[in-house]
Length: 154
Image (cartoon, rainbow, N blue to C red; front, top):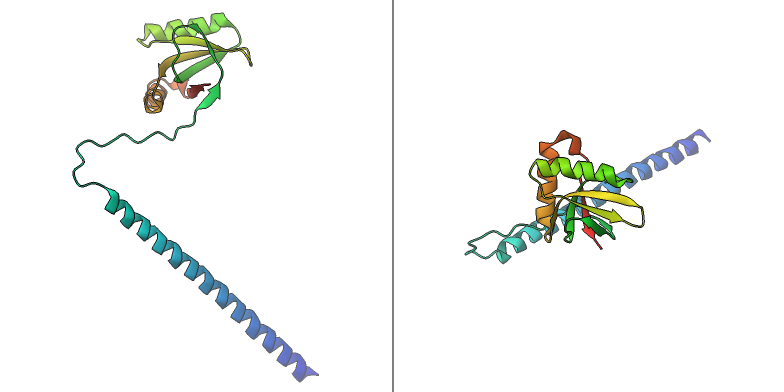
């Protein structure tokens, strides 16, 4: 009885260790395959790049824009805007707008009629990159605007 129990335990141990080894080799094979694809993609990108590029194009920003249906209350609105404040009451929005116009920004106020919120906009653009750049510079320059965000007009 003890011998058969010993044989069963030995077989279980052999199969158990053998199963672990195959998983490790499967992971290694998958890793090697992914590395080959990565190297192939890099080589393709190098081949597609023209040798006589004179001006580097600015990459399109991957910044997140919140889409809202807006109506301009004060100022002009383009497709992409930088919002520095949102208020339920228009006088609060007007005060913030005046503060940043005094600092040299061209500001606007828009209303989101669905939410009944006035948005104070510090810059409005037709280009995503320009809006993202302004948002980043405003956040860096003014600590109280660390929550400035990007808005895309529907």
